[in-house]
Length: 98
Image (cartoon, rainbow, N blue to C red; front, side, top):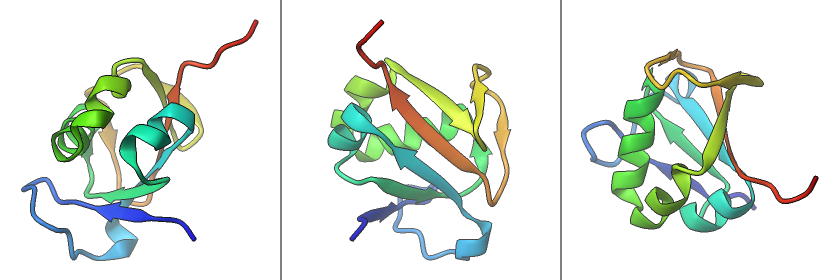
């Protein structure tokens, strides 16, 4: 069973409309640091969403700087990119290998 963490940009528990959410999916070390495999968020820009997630979980803050991000399966480098409701953010830590 997947654990789901929900938050709002105010830092209060989020009780919003699930259809209007963004889903954040954590992988590998990011999942371990977050303590959950999936989180829900309100829409916003990538930077603000990540800041709120890290404020809720300081362990995640240590890992997030080393991660790359996919939004709806497309690599994103612009942290100011607006993330719309219904989107998926994949949080991918560095992977070893060659």
